Image 1 (cartoon, rainbow, N blue to C red):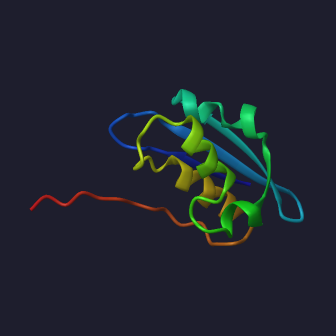
Image 2: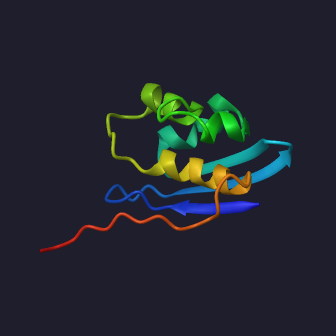
Image 3: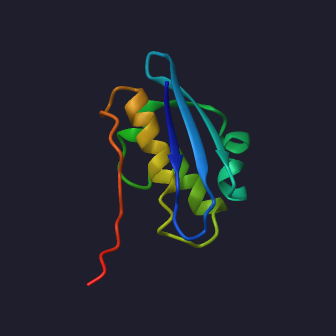
Length: 107
């Protein structure tokens, strides 16, 4: 089982994700978020996903990004979808778990 906590930035709407491999390439994903649009993902998409159909597709073709295109407020830089996919990817053994950062540099 892998868990991530996503701190998306200035909005402060934290998301917790738990991914658990349940059989073959199927991953159960539980998403809890302070963001209403993200918190509804499980109720609309369900909680079981084929890791290959989520992680090994071109950007924008995964079910989470498609959900965001329809249900998110206009905010293209939200990192939460990437965080959800990274958690699934690690749980399915498609990548090693490694923290990701975006740091602003003051000059």
